[in-house]
Image (cartoon, rainbow, N blue to C red):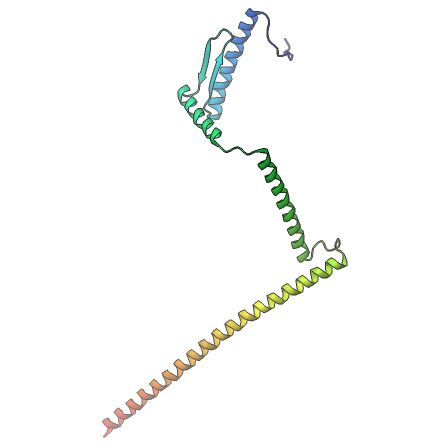
Length: 187
């Protein structure tokens, strides 16, 4: 027998409805159990029949599942809701920031010498002026660093020369003392 699609609508015959309910409830519980085992999921399923009877399935404990659900639901309800005006404001700000990012990326590509064919002569002149200014600033910073390093090296050299002079003076004193001792011993 070929299973075809059936139209989902209320079953008019009460006996047929009860039979279908029983079969589908059993199938639903079976699927819930399989999902619980396969995916290590905590599943709780509650069904109220049209006669008012309650059927439930819990992969662990229905009480713990309901408590967990209650906590999550409470946390979700406590989250601040944004008004439509706030959402629109955020969307507008996001669009503005995306536009700014795009503009900055294009500017960066131009500064790197890319995508210059689309630029007009005036824009190229402005870019050249910006690059010249930037290059001057880079050179000025390099010169400043070189001057600072040269000053440090000069100070270090002066310190070493001073230490060298001091060591020579001490060596000279030691040599004079040794010569004096030798002359005294020879007499």
